[in-house]
Image 1: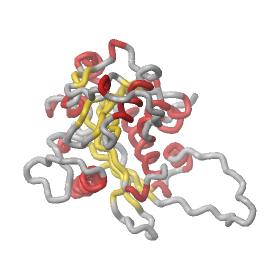
Image 2 (image 1 turned 90 degrees about the vertical axis):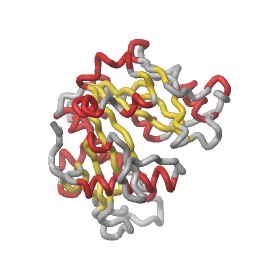
Image 3 (image 1 turned 180 degrees about the vertical axis):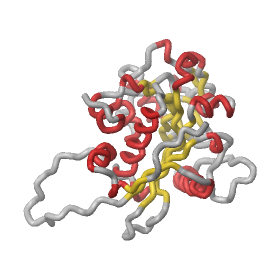
Image 4 (image 1 turned 30 degrees about the horizontal axis):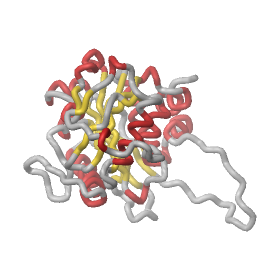
Length: 289
């Protein structure tokens, strides 16, 4: 069964209530003296779910651009994957959420500029498990599996990382989770290892004291980052995506795993829907607080 959400709708054409849910408003500030008074027009974006293989390929091309070209990941695509695409054995079982640029002024006009993929519990059973299980032992999460989805392969084009794209993705994901009665979400949140892992170890040390899941929800990495051999005292800020998850109410489920192909330290993230904090529940899950 493919739990497909609603058809794609351009953000500019969404009803006012839903548009607010996808793009929460920010307080306005007066323009400084002499500055232009007219704010730049927001991007025109559409958010929807891939309906055919060509759209999945567009998402895979973006993933390759971000992960391989920009980040230097060593990808191992499955047989038959076209050149310049990131594809693995989980992709055919996932729902692929895409954001397309509709702004004719943009060099990326008409292109997919943001994506997430979602593996539902039913699909995870068909493929034999979650992607996260390649990095972590999820035994303690077994009681959650029947209503737990997995998010992964999230990326946004480097020219469109100012908020609108990721907010649009989160809005569509929230609607999907609520409509399909999914209670929790798991995923791997990545941190760069370009400094040898010291920043990742330092962030883990701090977050383990403030956002660690209860023992019954903790998991173990299959290839652990050797945090005891690394510096853990650096004043590191969490990447924006991790910071957003934690503000919304997510837990860190255990020590980071080392992904040598992507050269990242991956934190196991669990988001119980019942723990989503007030303003996030209102904006992304449609719940009144």
